[in-house]
Image: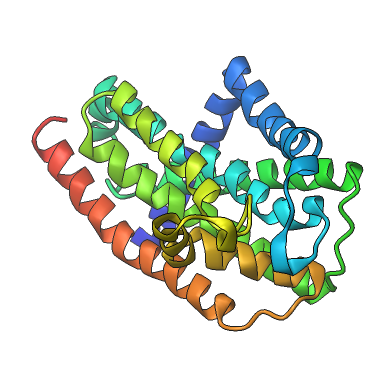
Length: 260
């Protein structure tokens, strides 16, 4: 059997292993399933009546759904840092060293499993939004682009999480990354209009990656003008993945070469 086919088989087995591990952790499964619904209800029913959408003129649920989708997928993707840190510090890597597998498939397995798991989490958040009154105007092609955008965001956050999980030396430190990713959409054009923020926060909101991704999703879902946000979002996501993957691979080689 050729090396690429062997590596693909190893990757598939590690992805299945990571997904099965998530299914066995009941509290984590409940959080990943319930969190998107809880976030959606919180923003629509608790905050929604007090927030205006500025010059967009959108109903608040239409305005906030793209941000909630990113929060749902991004939070779960950030937990990749914890799972890969657990592997590095819990002895699993020593077991992998005894097997004839390519080293790169171990972090890759975590990333691919994260994409699968958290795209499903975003689908749950979207279902909750539809139940609460969200009514998108997207075509089939728009939905395909939304799916690609969500998957790309989860992939980018999973890669960054893998890098962070390989940099730190404990699962507690690895878990800190999830808070950064969860709250990044708050300081964007996703929860409240960026135009209403004070100067420094407004500048940050307009120039951080969440804003063009949210604006692109909003344009696709609600048939709004997209402008340049699509190209900027694609550049952010592609750049993160292209730069993050080799860094993660390098860190993994260094950690395993030094014994973790």
